Length: 405
Image (cartoon, rainbow, N blue to C red):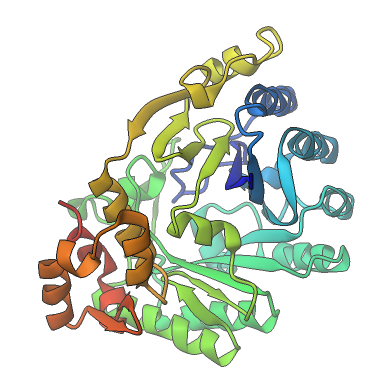
């Protein structure tokens, strides 16, 4: 009997300091906390290994936070446990997120020895002023130092993360960042548009229109930040992304992701194709056998379950341990997810796959939505696939919302 495919996400909730736009589950911690957490992660893996013994792991993603903040021996301990407790495919894509300012040649050699074969570097901008405004801990020069380290270590599958539509940004300044990043020749570029999330410093500044752009620091001292790009400026920034990266040989395969041929991120494609995935670590989310759940976001609770005193004997996948908020997905839930996740890919969704998975015709179930969105010029179809048009990509959230009952 062949094993089921599985993706693993491992969350490292630590960083040097929070960026002004970041709403991820992460924050600074002392060395003792980081070591104790690495030990707890190992115990969580041990507690679920029997539950997932009939799975083959196709991708691993160590994300955060800033996984590269860990010492080399801590990272090695995590990867050693992964290889012991899970059946990891010989050709698995194994990604680790890293940030400039936390990378050394010694660490890079350790990651390589652990089997990491893909790195994702958080650059965000090639402009030092923008990096400072974002609250990043590094300069562009420090990013270049990191870039040299990882290339010398032999990493030949590297992503660079960028953020557009920053305060005060224009299409011209964004184009400079794109050119700078693409000239380095990474195999993959993720170009996300800034989203001002509630609970972040940026939300205090930009979240409510009447608040203006007066930044308030914890010490009570204000600093003035430029306004966010208006709709026309943001559209220009958006158009520049595809045009510039296309000239450098990057093809867009998902709304915000560009790759050289053959370097598409397999782990992220798995999310958009609704493959099963298991999240390990604080707050990590999972989708297993059409059931969604996530680990607690409470560090004290997580460490109480998987810390040294408890030994981590509970099984999160069975409803015990750190997992909570279990949701059994209905048929409608699964069909909706198939559509709005699949439409993120430029190739769109396959009518044949929909029929095979759900035993129904997509053009019957969603006849009115497809007709309306096609007439509006937001969807198109060809060779048994349905996909977003260029205009549909512009307002993709509206398109997705049309398929949610």
